[in-house]
Amino acid sequence: MLHRGPHALYLDLDGRCLGVVAASAVQVPCALRTRLPVLPAAAEARVEAGVLHLDGVPLRVGRICDAAVPALERDALGPLGAAVADLVGAGDGLTPYGDDVLCGWLAVHRATGRATPSVDAAVRDRLDRTTSLSAALLDCALHGEVIPEFAAYLAALGTADEGPATATLRAVGHSSGAGLLQGAQWALAA
Image 1 (cartoon, rainbow, N blue to C red):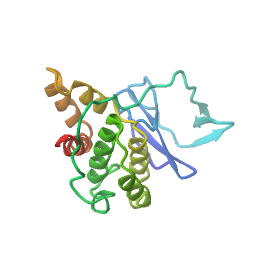
Image 2 (cartoon, rainbow, N blue to C red):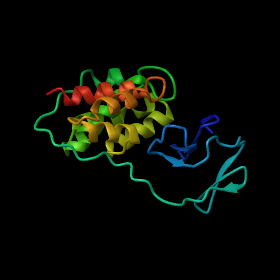
Image 3 (cartoon, rainbow, N blue to C red):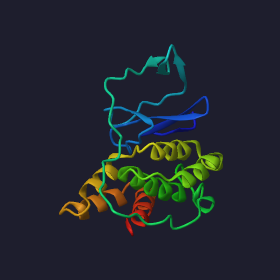
Image 4 (cartoon, rainbow, N blue to C red):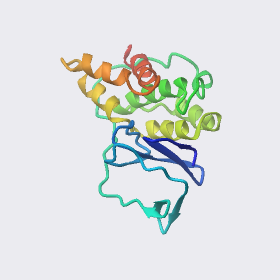
């Protein structure tokens, strides 16, 4: 276990981070989502025949949630506001602020269908410089997978819902929402 708390736990599965989150936690795209308000305390996690067991109890997957970023029409996108080397792992916590900024910027590019091969390569080359969870979320962003609040923000751009969606995104985590928003704003600045 990489992290264990009442609302989320994160596991290292052969170098990949997998989360299990309560309904009240941030619904990260690299997690199994539960309907539980609080997760039961778990001391052990193991995978048997492809099934995750927490303290011997198998977690049954009931449905697959779509974490894809919504399509976005934009003629041009803004550049990354800082060097990848200065962003990866910059900050504290489970998801450093710099990584969140990168996730937002990358996700907007995926939403518009624009490739970013040099940034992608630079991010992949530096994934070992950040936390396991943040590396997993950067990989998700590289594949166009985001949290629901970010997807809602992009879907609300240019509508009456943009203000409330921005506020909801900004409120995610200690600084994760603000970082995602910063990265999105850099990308949308063109």
